[in-house]
Structure formats: structure tokens, C-alpha cells
Image (cartoon, rainbow, N blue to C red; front, side):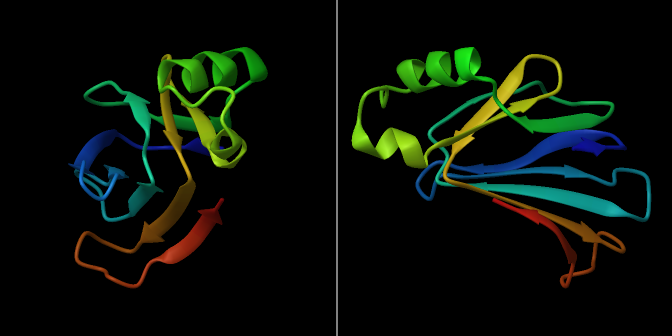
Length: 113
């Protein structure tokens, strides 16, 4: 999935394992990626555009080993998303919503894993 616009990590809550990456800086439309149950990340401070795909098997295996769940029964529930520019997020759920503006609280659901 190719998402246009500048994106930056906005919020990372360690205790609740949540990560939000958000676009819309300087534009009306806002796209929010909310990762839940985050187990590991490798991020840049910003992206000019963002591509989000399921990681291929070599990257998935490497990330599962890195976060210490390789070989565990819970590993099959972990989703590893490859992001632009050699970044990744290992989590349980991803929700992508699009908002009309930064103050909008009722965004349109684009994707849910």
C-alpha cells in the first residue's frame, strides 16, 4: 500500500505498546497508521511517502528472532510490516484511517489487519 504525503512518528506508548505514524503536516488530509501490540520497530524520523507491506519471509524471520519470539507459538500472530527505507514494525494489529483534517475525530477506515 502506497501512502502519499510526509509521515512522521507521532506517538509511541511503550506501556500500551502503541505506535502512531501520521501524515498531514501542512495539508488538510491526515492519514494515521496505528500499530497495536508493538513488539519491535526500526523507524526513521520522517518519510516523504510511505509504503506499507507484509514483510517477506527472510525479513519476518530476522525480525521475529530479533524481538525474541521466533519458535514460540505466539509468533504466528505477530505481523511484521515492512515500511519505506528499510524500516519495520512488528505488532499484532495495524489500523489505517484517513481524516479530513487534523481536528477530525471520525476518520474513514482504510485498512485493518
